[in-house]
Image (cartoon, rainbow, N blue to C red):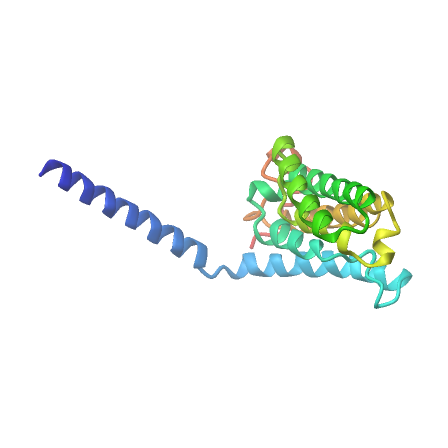
Length: 201
């Protein structure tokens, strides 16, 4: 009887916690959505602008797909451990390096290079504690990208990966700290210099 009652109390508690989490995650927060939009728009927009200055529309060398996924984290889920600077920069660089290395070893074996680049990136990011999901896409792009991408070799790590990542990071530092209700990164020592007192949304 006591076990049944304890199980019922535990089930009720778990239900209430689940309901709270679902409510919190689906609640409409106009301020959060506004700053997420502004940050992502300016971050990706700046990279796209630089792309348009130097390359044709069909040669997406600087604007790689994984930056879109990165923007979701650094502008839309800024408290996530996966969005923090160590993960953002470290994960992208590690994955880019691994992707290029794998492509150089097996340049014409797509069924080996694609899964190997992604899986190795995941493991190394886990080992180095720099797990950043878009890194998997960065590694994959290094082996399945256009000839413009693959011909870059290890320069791919610096340009576009490091360059674009730094742009998104700087924009995230600025726009995620313009309001008191948002803080990025979660380390207060790093955000103190970027926080402003003039905006309170």
